[in-house]
Image 1 (cartoon, one colour):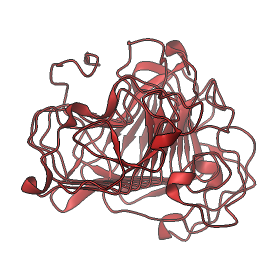
Image 2 (cartoon, rainbow, N blue to C red):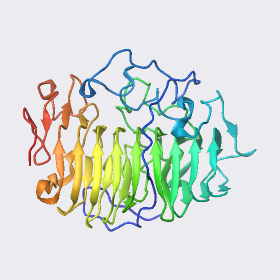
Image 3 (tube, rainbow, N blue to C red):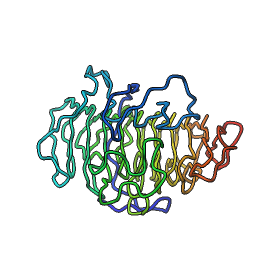
Image 4 (cartoon, helix red, strand yellow):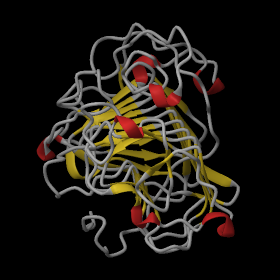
Length: 384
């Protein structure tokens, strides 16, 4: 793997990001009677709750969390494919799978693979327009790819779980918080670093549970083929006591010139040193939609480039929560071209409660507006 410098310091451009997302599957997760572990179920909400009043794993089910993402919460007809709901257990893809051996998957184009468990040093996937539904990918490969995809056009992961093999639940996360409030999370030597695509496929990532790693390095999309991240629970990055990893949620994308991309209604919460949305290059990012997400922790929570040249960026209806400790701020460099570049920032709120880890905000900030141009809260929305 390449070396990545700690953000927000200026870094060398990394190998171009490869792969993820296309058409959005905005399916509602249903509760399941799944077994205990990181995918255990909780009741669905009995009444409506405002986004700024909810947190992941609070029992409301408003945000993506353990109750509504991952293989054990797969509903019937996930992705409109006519499949059954999670049957109560997974089928091993192959006998004698282990963390010490790579696993190569070669499927016919247009295959749908459901309710399979893949455990390996590295899962290497060949085939185009593949759809994985209700699957588990687990292993231990520090500083490398747990899942490495060779697809030309499209790849989809729906209601699947990506995790270290040594743990059923993230260390420090008892299922009542969005992500562990304490370090280090999964130790480096039991972690995996990335899932990435080695060719130009874009992917749909919907209702997945992803943790114990350091990023999801995938292409941001091409004109007419946006990458799409919806309803995912991305949390509990690995080895958060150290700077060996460059902790990213969606990303890193280190060259710029990325988009189109849809990031809608995800939980992006973890201690870490970089970004929930890690678009970290100096090329032009264009047509990025970041909407209705729960974001907490990180270094700078989101980065949309490291120079002020992005255009057609939409950041709306997000909850930026003070739940977790944050190293720097919510937007890298306060870089925001605004309406002059076709961009929109509206209805982004701060959530702050007593005892939260981000001490820059207090209960007096709760429910107030966050502007991209300064870290203070406001009683009126941003209009620039």
